[in-house]
Image 1 (cartoon, rainbow, N blue to C red):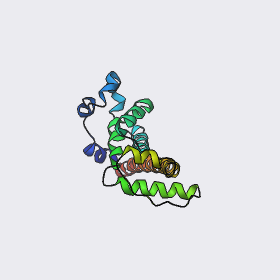
Image 2: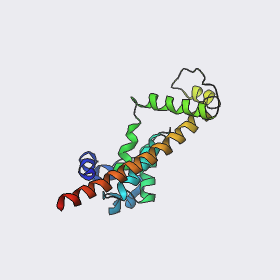
Image 3: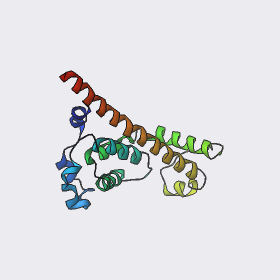
Image 4: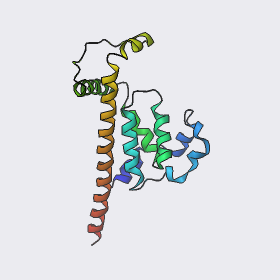
Length: 167
């Protein structure tokens, strides 16, 4: 069943309630619905986490937690999934987003060399920024939809298999 698998890797409520960046949500984090894992909350949490993972911004965990609170879904799953975007996967994901955005906008892909500086970001935001951001949004939406329906169907089929096993 997906519930047991997900719960095995899910962070504990105390660790997220005491996280320095998530303390700003205060009493909102004490809502028991944010910590329950069921067939309604898990697919929404996967969709939120996968969508936010594609947003190129710092503190993705905070945005993911805010969306989990707004949509009343499992907060640990939504927050944990943003770590799909990490220093190892980020270059590949964001390059794919840029290439997709360039293809959608009919822009020829431009050569660029990344520099970790504010000056480079300001200079490239007008050239590679629009295709990159469009690609991130499209891939975020696509992966959110895929994640939602995958978890929803996994949950549905695991319940069906349990019912059949009982008969």
